[in-house]
Length: 462
Image (cartoon, rainbow, N blue to C red; front, side, top):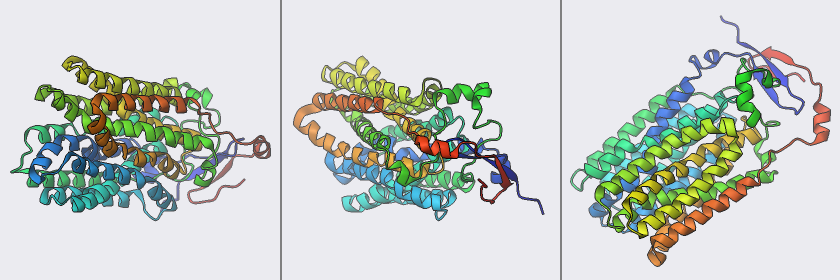
């Protein structure tokens, strides 16, 4: 019988424990690069809910005689539940009662239910329950699992990798935007939606079967967590984004104002993003643009939304998470003003240009918050801590149906001006952030703690 893999635990002067020495293959049976590719595929499937729905709305309205408000109530409820499940799931996940494999299976089955029922009935109450609540919970489980998993397996260089996986949530929907725009009709909507649901379930369940969280405090042996500056590659990433001072539990993180500022900023940017995603195609049609402009704008929004997430992950490793996030919020805000102005003035070229810029900004902030949270509060409890921050999307999702009412009362131009202002407000909030620190007396008490060694499953000696 093989002996359990040995590891050692290093305690820094701040009191943070790093568990090093274990090869990922001994834990997973696979290279840790699989914890990038598998979540990426699952995220591409999950993004259909958010980024392709707007292209399916016209056929759904024709099939079921839904109003605009009824149609986008589904996305509002979906967004609320998708974000709302992150915190309770994070708490349960960290206790080991709902491992990532099981969460992915549930997410896949719930996604299937949502799309099958959407194709079978136009009862708005039933669809709010199945597409909005059940589909939202299912997607939320998949999203929270995938985003947090990458950061846990790459704590020393999470930027580009988390951004890459997060990006799949955007551009993975492009084939479905095309299908819903050109081959989705009243006569075939039932079986098309059923096939989409089956596809999503297969991707989520198959990928989820191989996923697993690393042990608490796990850190790759190739990078010394206390002397990372000696490693040039690590220093480049960690100089701008050093590891959290310690592993903050959820209760400890809630005592720091930074968590609430992140929550407020994500609430604002998520609301602006969901509004733009939901109404861009309708605005283009209302501005009498050619059909291809509306469809191509939606495709490019999803494409740039996804690729932008990967780009900013790489960029944040070099500029810093906070600085990159501020830049994204400003770009998102200015793009809303550009979309509103060009639509009101019936300028197709500028509308398309600003739609692309808006697509970049409307997705790029999500991986930034996903990385900034463990950078500030550590990886061990990130499922819970990021769950608090990400729950801001619940309240941001309310802006989609509210946006419909505001558009009806004030027009698209005024609504996009308001959206741009909210994004700039988020940039101002992010600018106030400062990394949480450990009290000086705690540092003094922990200074000089020795390196400890043990076997897998052994408790740290200190």
